[in-house]
Image (cartoon, rainbow, N blue to C red; front, side, top):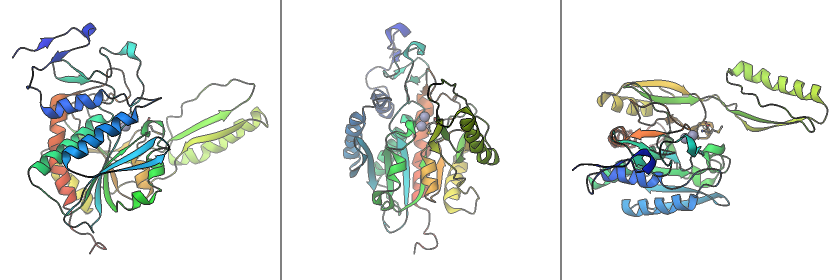
Length: 355
Ligand code: MET
Ligand SMILES: [Zn+2]
Ligand SMILES: [Zn+2]
């Protein structure tokens, strides 16, 4: 069947004929069209979509309103040994704003071009992962599988604005602790080579607002920051503010100091399950520290292991960029990766203290 081609100005791109697109890709494109974009994300649309997903999967969904208008949704597949610690598949539902003029296509139209590249805000960060989790679970359920450990899919708001009304609050609530988490997967980044990148730690974000009444200042970007530099750095700000005048103050919007990272030794049962599955699928895995910050930092601060992983190889890193896209074949391959990873993680044998 010949594709029906629209030029970029038509905003349509190339569409598959009816029935030729993989339903998982169609679902991904549908999700990309929801405008969960800051500064006013349509979270109601996301929750409605997730409720439909839960219904299709035949799994219960809980809603935890962590702040007014900010709901964390949790879809749960109870394991055959529910007393064991669970596996969390986390994703955030919000996306960063766009400069429409810089985009080839409408960033909320989920246009697919002739090469199968799907353009949309969130196509890499991280609506792809949300749908990959859901589709992997759908396929595993359809195949009649069940695993010892309970699997929770958590969908959180406001990651892109610092997580205050999202994961940061959620981890402090009893509903989070009741999940009885053993291990969590969260977002990572694309890798332009054939390898996949996994993240076992993050940089500590410091977002600082300096108040200097009556005297306009200029923003500064502090890119390099080792632990030692960071400790000294606040003294510098203090000194600068003091020199600028007694009424000059500063506030932290983000001040993370936690240096916890997740164990990636082969002796660690969670890491072993993750890495041996990747090996069995002939995937090359590169371990890195995440260059920015994700909701994993809140999970790690609770003392729980979390790996940042978005299965996108052969893909330029386009998170927060204009013309963010993901190729449909890479997307589909990612579902297969989770179809293997999820069973491996949810079948990690009981750890000491679990029996
Ligand atoms: C410090 S909040 C992090 C927001 C977003 N994930 C970013 O890295 O830009
Ligand atoms: Zn993200
Ligand atoms: Zn982001």
